[in-house]
Amino acid sequence: MKAWRAAAAGLAQTPEAGAWADLRQVHVRYGRVQALADVTLRIAPGERVALVGANGSGKSTLLRVLHGLADSHGGGLLCDPALRQAMLFQRPHMLRTSARNNVALALWLRGTRWGEACTQALLALQRVGLADVAGQNARTLSGGQQQRVALARAWALRPDVLLLDEPTASLDPHAKREVEALMADFAVCDGSDGSAVEVHRPMPMTMVFSSHNLGQVKRLASRVVYLEHGRVVADLPVHGFFNGPLPEAARLFVKGELVS
Image (cartoon, rainbow, N blue to C red; front, side, top):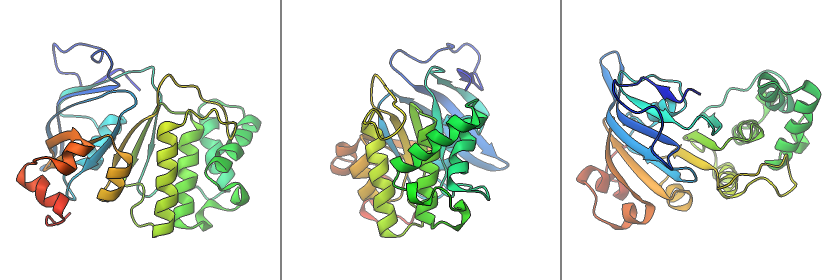
C-alpha cells in the first residue's frame, strides 16, 4: 500500500505520530452520488473501530478507501506502509477449488512457495475450526463456513490491520457467533499460541468493521464512528456512543427508530 494516496497539495507525507491511518477531508463520488463528504478521521494502531449508519451512509466506501480500493476526489489518506492490511468482504469470493487452496493461493500470490503455502493454509483453517473441510470445494460450504475460510485467508497473511465489511450479515445466529468470536480473538491475540504460524505484534491487531448489529458493536468495538450521507456525524468511545448525548439521527439509529 502506498503511504500517500490522492494527496492534497501541501499536506505532509506521513501520518501523525501514533497513527495507522489519517484521512483528511476525503471526498468520494460515484457519478452524481456523494459517497463520502469531507471525512476527516484518524485511526491509531490497536484500535477497534466500528462504522455504523443507515444503508448508503458511506461505510463500505470508507473501508474501500482505507484499503486502497477507492480513490478520493479530494483530500487525502495517509497510511503507515509498515503495517500490513487485509480486508474481508460481506460476500467473500470463493474460487472453485478446495478451502485449503483458497487460503494457500493468497499466500502463494504474496510469494510463498506452494508447499509452504499449503502448510500455512491448513494451520489457518485449523485456527478457524475448519481443518476437517480443508479438502472440500469452498463453494459447497455454508455461508458461515465460507466467511470463516475468508477469515482464515486474511489471517494467514498475518495482517496488522483487518478491515471487515458487514462480516456477519446474512449469516444464521450460530454462524454469526462463530465469526464474531474469531473477530474478538483476532483483535486481542498475537497468534503465538501455537495454533498457527506465529505472529508477534507490539500491540493488538487494528480492526475496522462496518456493522448494523449494535450488540456486536458493543461487544467488539472500542470506538464508534456514525456516518450519515457520507459524513462523520459522531465519533466516540463505545461507552459514550451508547450512553451519552448524540446528534438526533444517531440517537434514533441507536434506538432502532431510523431505518437502516
